[in-house]
Image 1 (cartoon, rainbow, N blue to C red):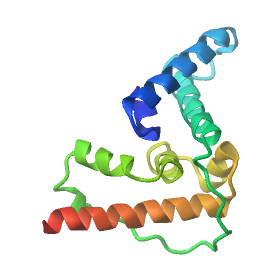
Image 2 (image 1 turned 120 degrees about the horizontal axis):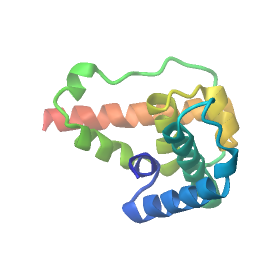
Image 3 (image 1 turned 45 degrees about the vertical axis):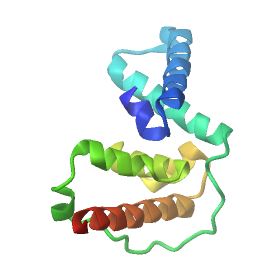
Image 4 (image 1 turned 135 degrees about the horizontal axis):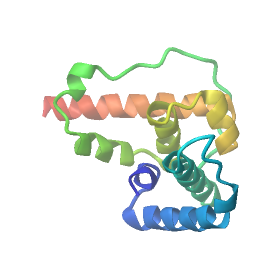
Length: 148
């Protein structure tokens, strides 16, 4: 549920994603190979894929022009020290759905832009654009919270 919540706007959508992921897991349990990884990792990947399928089905991934790779501003760690994990998660949830998904895949899950593009069915440039927008938005909001 925690993983699904990172990709959804509310608990209802996250619960639907988890339910679909468990159905998919039970249907393909026979294909699970414990020598390739843990069942937790396998299920997490299924939940992420279901969340992305949910975003695609609801057309949350827009089409954007290809962008050249540019330096992305990174939020100052000193600014985030004053935020709780819950406050930071709430800010991430305020991102547009596709931007939130790319941010989570890149920052939290550790996927490359090439991998994100393949998973989400978008270009690498679009993935970079979403990440850049997420970072700019989060940096602005964190600065606003710290100055309040």
